[in-house]
Image (cartoon, rainbow, N blue to C red; front, side, top):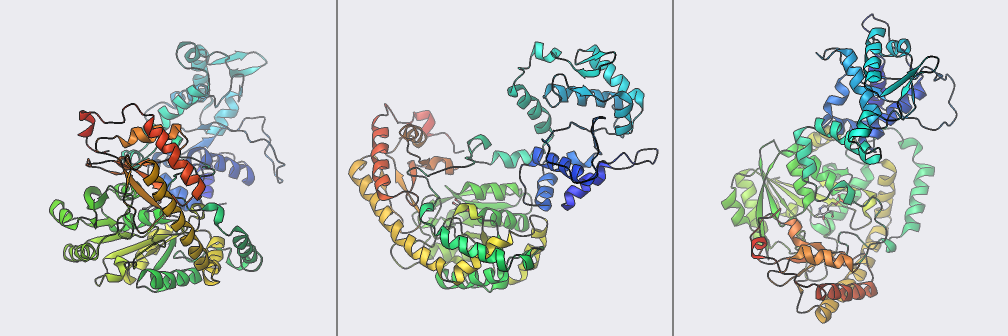
Length: 597
Ligand SMILES: Cc1ncc(COP(=O)(O)O)c(C=O)c1O
């Protein structure tokens, strides 16, 4: 069992006031209940430290109070391995002996809530007062008073010889709450959400979309989903062979906790790759493997920023960076992006003393422009003078279609102010969840130390398979193949837009990446066009969702990597139909001057 799980079980078995331990259930059962506790509140965490990190933030109150599990008296405590039994969710009772609220009242509140949320179903039998009193470590009178109150209010029924059970119709059912899952949802939100910290809620609000809109299993990408590579062209067969070989020959020796900085051969392979292709100057010691660029942003923000520090962010820019930096308590300062990238002069004017600047210099997200050498040098000079950090996100720079690639900012940095991050999400596949940070040599210890409190390390099997994938040449081959495919798809998109949407979409095709932006005529509302496109089965993202300050024109982000040329042509045709079907995609004057999100 994980450390957290063990701790939770221990806290459940804490001694009663009279010194006797509250009866424990056996280990497997306890583990199951802890598992239910965690899955109920936290969804899936990779391991206990991740769960702890989540718990420590918005949920800190939940585990700091002593809690006990109500185990119905008729339940047998197994001593041998239990057979597979259907999972039953037992209500958890939290009684706080230090509270000024009487214990019977706390118990009454908890049982009433369990009834209203459906946790205690209609007709469910409650334990006898003596049994529950024993399990909770309170006097029988406490339980008796709580039951009496619930009986008097109509939540419970009691019949001689039949014990006490949950009533069929509760007062709330009659008065307000719908008896469906809607009621359940309301009651849970009402109690749990109200205890979330202000910080937790602020971070959640930075999310570009509510949980209900985040696809859990997105399926085949439609035209023009952005940020997704050609998933159908990944060499799964080779990957399967590499993973299987590692499971057979290496996993046993590597199944204990591993180096938090990452699997050494993978770090060496990454250092060699980015040294050659991106001009990044580093050794394997400076590479830290993380679960994607988002994790890299989060770790860097935790370590580099204090609450209240100013941070430059590109405007328009990547919402994931906003979330990570804002989550670390930074005050975000939007800096405009021009045709040659982040406007460093504007940054110096707006906030010369910022602590950090987040940039995507190789292929700005979402506009796709490349930061010029002049702007790069200006940014490095500012960082050195202001002693600020540059967070360089090189998320999809493997694909460059013309011209000589500009080397990474990190390679130009002479004063150790750049933290470089990359990801395998775009070049391989997003669900792999592997990325990396390159940090100055004297920062590796700090990053590794903090990382131990986040997730310790990413799964070893994928790291080993990826190291083999790179060193055995599959990686370079895949990139080369995709380079050709994406160049053709990009050309197909540009040509189709020119012939079908020439007057409505002006494409400034960047020389790199996996998406481009089509600019709409002035005053055309990109959000409305996006909604209409969806009705025609086309997925685009309005540029306006990425900006903080108004822009003279709005546009659509069009990804071209995930769909073939035929699908691209059909998609453009449907997009043209969608736009032409719109009565008036023009923004009103009031909307035009609305400040950004
Ligand atoms: C600019 C940018 N940075 C980082 C990421 C996150 O990548 P990852 O999937 O590795 O977390 C994305 C994903 O779309 C992105 O667009």
